Length: 114
Image 1 (cartoon, rainbow, N blue to C red):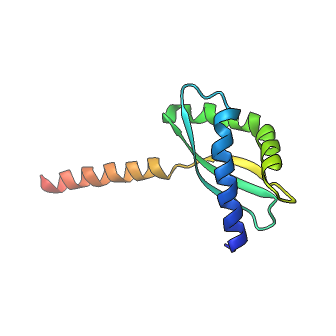
Image 2: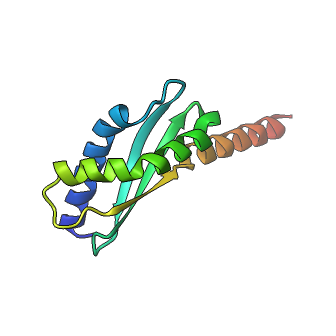
């Protein structure tokens, strides 16, 4: 990844984190922007999020997809870029997968002790 893309990713992540609190009516859950991955041509951007509690993943994604046009417009106003990439929101599942692996390792460890 080039330095330019890394800077764009960081800037978009920072601006998204700030604007999500004002754009969404998320009273029952908390959305955290975990990472941003912008394409080299700056046309597309995957935004990785986590939602707490996890049972609201679907609701959060639906709200983000509905609000994505407004979020893009806000980014256009805040970022001084020729193109603001089209945002695609995705749930970051690494934390849940890590929890599953840890539980499996714990269970294996208990089985070995027997």
